[in-house]
Image (cartoon, rainbow, N blue to C red; front, side, top):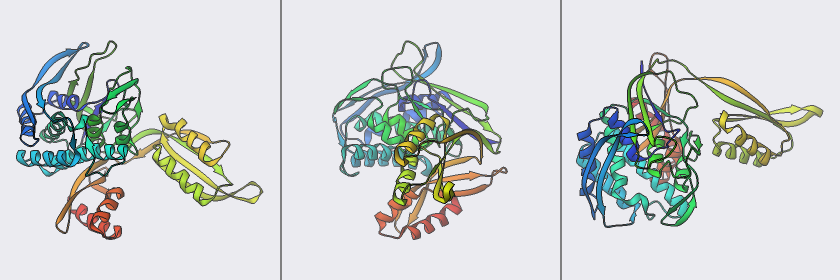
Length: 410
């Protein structure tokens, strides 16, 4: 049996305090999480936490746990680098294990990277506004502590589709459409499906999005096979008329076996496109959320050289894929099939890798076979490229070093 976690945010979305509360509700040590929250104030100048506790409430008929926190923060914006230093110091003072610390730092780096892209600034110089408060650190450190206490970093973690809400948001830069740009950038290129949900308000926050993106391998259309063991409900502070503002965390076990899901298989023939157009088409389909894109050269009627483009994507993204195909390739039609897919269980791990005197946290996709043995462990090449650029080394050499260390740790 393999450990499996489902984070259900398809109704009320996800925020950092909601996820943390759900983990406590599922059995994480309340005291350890409280200690982690209070530890933040010693590393973030100008901030003070007066109280932090978890209370049982009833939200729209559901018994749930809710974080009650009172804090003061005299600073309204901070550089991302300052937040990283504060989070690092907090993790070290708590003695968090490497997996928990890596998860916490990766979550914060995801938020900062999204803000840097939005504002066209460097990672080290970007200023944070809403994400610069002590609440953000408390959410991240509290969740990392709770996940570690429940021994879930070795579990396979998936989410449902993510409710983001609708309408408009007002924040430090004015009025913007919901979901916030930071939320969109955080999920960009990742295997998550976003849905509006039942409210014209913000349901998923940037911190909640970043925590989910670094914790779960993606969203699934159907619940995987699971034997429930623990269920946690974490309530937010907003109240909605038609549903409970609650995120649900289900912890259980699943047989180690091939997993089955349903996907869309989309195909079209293209006989009048250049190599540059085809390369751009692949990039656009991938950015739009395709699980796989294959281009096969061939010959069609009248002996014309052509390409067969085959796209595998979540069924919910079928129209999106068709829109990209029609818009970018000029094709006039496409074939769509709903097919079953069998895959090995996969987990995205964050593994510390030492190269010279530096240590980097690298995302590694690990697949297990039917006996629970590691069948493959593949580092994310985007991480490889970033490390190679920082160290001035060939990416090929960096990948060799990472693979050697991953083989010992995965």
